[in-house]
Length: 250
Image (cartoon, rainbow, N blue to C red):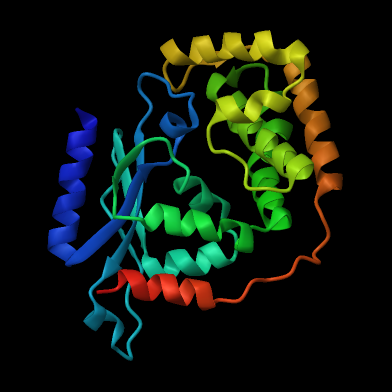
């Protein structure tokens, strides 16, 4: 099984680099819920060094990873880097912490991080992130005479996440099936059909555009750009993150 292959590679990284992996999870289409049979595996992880590593005046590398190939994309962030990005409401990191496909997790690490999410989540920053992911796909890639099937989901998922934030002001779910609740009922059958196709088609599979879906996506981009909240959100202090950092450095 691919999970065993990934776990073996993560264990090798831990031993070679003398680190402890606190969380390793799937972060791409396999976690989002619309993988193709030949989708690669996007494994992401957060790791921590031993205490002595941090007692140094020198800056050290804060990322680890393995060479990317056609099947595996494995990379991770050192804990301080992850916490700094968490403080900035990094949307990708918030997704890792919700991944339904977890390879390994240390003790209460995910629960500790999730508990802090409401303090640091920024609706403005997250909406900008998701809109930037979707805008180019909608306006350029889906406007071609033939489009890659997967691009519809690379537009739909971030726009549905942005819509979730606009309506609820909370961290959006990672999984597509949970996000699609706000999809207009008239589009559900179209999206179901695309999901069925993607489940059996290769990553490069192309289709003719779906006009009704394209129109919806264009209108969503326009609406959501106007719905981004102003930059008046309070910033939480860093002490809770300092405490969490110290808990996992041993």
